[in-house]
Length: 423
Image (cartoon, rainbow, N blue to C red):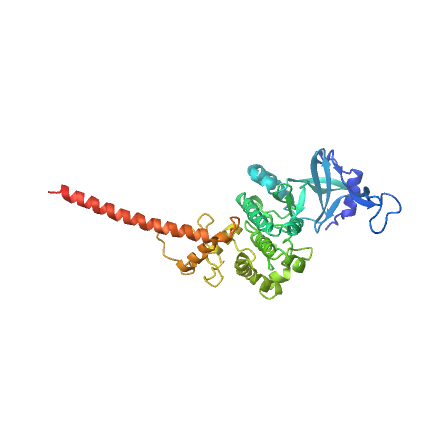
């Protein structure tokens, strides 16, 4: 096994310009900024002339577990050069190639995933060429940075961010893509509020479903028993729910950030996910002032106890959970998926006249009325409130009753007319 260059060797090669691929031509790499006193004699209390930023010798970069990323520009266009510091597996080049094709086939992906191209002969170090990934430079805050920013301004705004998160995850699924490692530092919020993912080493695509990556994602966001072969179309569901529940919880109780955020998570840690209901956080969220958070707790708990891949996408999971609420009124629906389940034949789209499902629990009129009475207290962005859903179902039920009565009357009139015509 060959030894891969570290971040220092890659930085030295980039500084020397040891690359020749056309995609790397014309890039000016940014330098890190150091702050030095503008003039001698600046007071310890900050009095005196302002400090002036100056470029240092080091390149602006971000170091991760698998790669170092250098940032630069080609004219007005931002560029990020991702240099792997370990072997990403034999399937990595093909995954990136198929991702380029998938983005071309699904233009909506351009808004959700950063552009990325694998280059086999990227940077030369001591006579050996090493691969790199040339990526779009996403301008904005990381998800964690955006959460902190919103908490400082208006914590309730995290409800909107949770809604945007759910739409972002759904957009990936609609384009037959799963990120594979959704977490606070792999998704950015751009200046116009768009969520965009980077670090695409573990992306799942139908064309490379047989080539799983050799990583299982960030431990504070992934299922506690996820293995390398737990990788498929719905691999993002667990981490997506962890983020969604965290955002909703923080919007209701901003002080959770100070108590449970450790710099690598939002509120949940791998210990919380490995021991559902046995850490203080679970008790705290179970008594959240936000009813939606209290409803999400048993759903996430069941996923923690279940298989690493529940085979449900986030939107379907939330929709199913709305119909089987575990808040004391209704029985929890099982998340175990039937082996014969067909993605195009969802169980919740039941045929008309189908017998009731004994494993499902339904609203009672009393519960529905109580929900409807409090519906005005929730905003339209709260996709977890189902009073409107119940009201719609109730109106639909009255509509069917009236239609049936009208049919009976019409049949009677026709019968009278027909009898009058018969001698």
